[in-house]
Length: 325
Image (cartoon, rainbow, N blue to C red; front, side):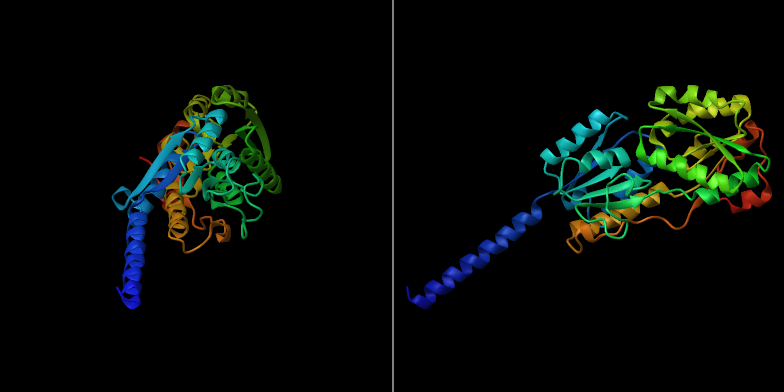
């Protein structure tokens, strides 16, 4: 065999081997981990939007993508274990739904790309250095509420309201930040905020009852602990004729009378689009700015409003994105 023939045979082997390796790598499944702190409609809608976006754009099961979903059922110890398990499973990317899930995930890996969703203030939660330049291996979408516009709506529906009650988890950093923002905005409008802190879902009903006689309306933020037990707050508000407002639209179908907020399904799809960029290699996660929704949804529940002693005006109803029958 001449030297030239040997060269071509060697070249053919290298090219064939490279092609085989590339095909083999292409067939290797992409693993995406999803960790969620608790089940409730807003977070579930976020997860569904994320998965739908991926599947509709070539990142579904039939495309060799495996999605591993785990729920901590509002237990931080379990959330931490889930984070460690996903690292051990060597997933390609993680979606962390809620602040606690994102914090627990960020604590165990600096290598695996993490996208958070439904996080109110990622800077205060120490997930990113800044919204424009997150740095590290984490970015995502935030669900920060338009508090000023929410209070404007509250005053339009209940003009005589002067005292706003709120129930929140004092151990969740974003919930504490939300209450501080509500108090600051309320003060600008001459309103007073009476807060009732809890540490678990079991204390939500009692906290809501403690506000009876002290407030004119109740406003619930995107607090995971409280939203998971929203029905108990709804019951108190119906019995005592206290108008209940929410900061997430899914809570309106569950009994709040109104919410001006982000659409969590769309937020999930927005996060899915970010994931596709990272998985496709078109951008590094450290270069992805934190995103949010500019357009808000107004969901209204006239039936619940009536049960809480309020009538929604035609002007308000006409602006509604969705009216719950």
